[in-house]
Image 1 (tube, one colour):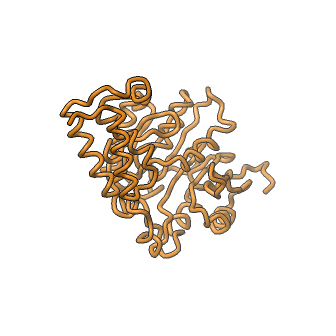
Image 2 (cartoon, one colour):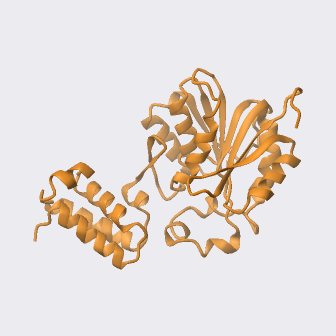
Image 3 (spheres, rainbow, N blue to C red):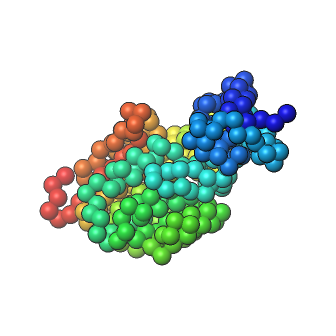
Length: 289
């Protein structure tokens, strides 16, 4: 029996609800749009448009995979972040709205014509770095990641967005080999999940996201202990940093950066009003902590 767009959406939603998938309404719409080469407007304005057999088969594949809790971003191979669209694979974390808090802060007092140098540690898909470069045409950036597969995704995203000329990507262990005082802004979304917590995460994260990008050691703070002094080392005097944290890590991460010598350290809350990003500056000779 031939399905139309409305029936396809309603059927997909019912199946995802039965499978207890979070956000079934939005996920069903996204899957139908992608499978049927349709838009949200099409579903509203032309709800009785029939799906071709090929489109129906594609939708069946998509919904079956989502019922098994495969992330929509992996099924479709893309995810919107800030104002850009990114290719996403199982080799990188799926960009999340929470991380846009890093971008929002970083753009504050960042003049559009300023030729800033940006360092993104643990660049993954390139989400943070590329969102910033898209907003600031005079800036240039370097993304570091230990995963060559993740770097391939980031390079592809940079090329697709027309930003390859201003973004470089290198495989490395955080800041190893990076020059001192070379950057105006350092951003990072390091692994911060405590080992014992990982198995309690939603299947979309636990079973499909790269474990390397999640595991932060016994207490989730292993990487911050390395990064705090190193971020201060590679920043220019007066340079700024913004690092994402877990919702309960504010005090510990702030303390690590203060001990490393950072000034004006504070934590920015995300749209869900949770502690999300620790920010601060490298002091100058004139700075009074």
